[in-house]
Image 1: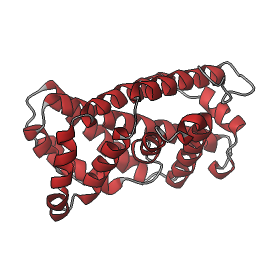
Image 2 (image 1 turned 120 degrees about the vertical axis):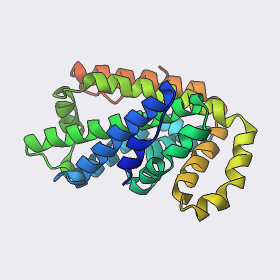
Image 3 (image 1 turned 90 degrees about the horizontal axis):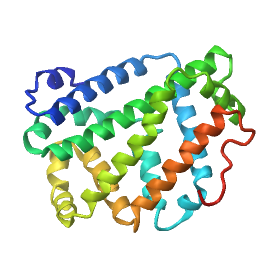
Image 4 (image 1 turned 180 degrees about the horizontal axis):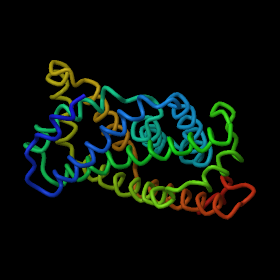
Length: 249
């Protein structure tokens, strides 16, 4: 991986410093997680949570105007699958990012990194709490999930996770409305392949395409945030059906 490149890059703005700090934190966490004895269980729990999110937001997930956006959120931003190569390439091109990208884009990238980092840290904590109770991740139920959720020492990070989803989603929406970005992504496909950055390029293109297909991103984000905040309140209060919400919050 490319930690030394991150450390040695000269950063001149607060946005670049924030991105550098978060990439270093994420780099170190990824290294720690890769050697963790419960690594495979984190993927199991992440997949369970992705399916729970699809169920809770089924109306949005099945809606043709929002399906692609939610799919991108669950498979790329939330990332139940391993994204090691993509993340390594972000580290690798960091010096060029801070040299060529404007601060507002660096801020958005920092938000994406922070969201991914917090999400994976929370998943690992849940897995460790399950393990302490001798509950295999493969046998997790809603009751088990709520039990370890309430035992979490990272509830503030959970609240921040929801806020980051809203912030990052709204920032991404602003960028994809710029047709120039789509043209640049199309023109840069071959150079990206030549630079061995096709996985990173595909990630950006999937995000661009998913958000371009949505008519009202604010509606999606507002409903996601409102519902997930209600789910959190339900779990913490011991609600018997924490994931069952009124049809229109």
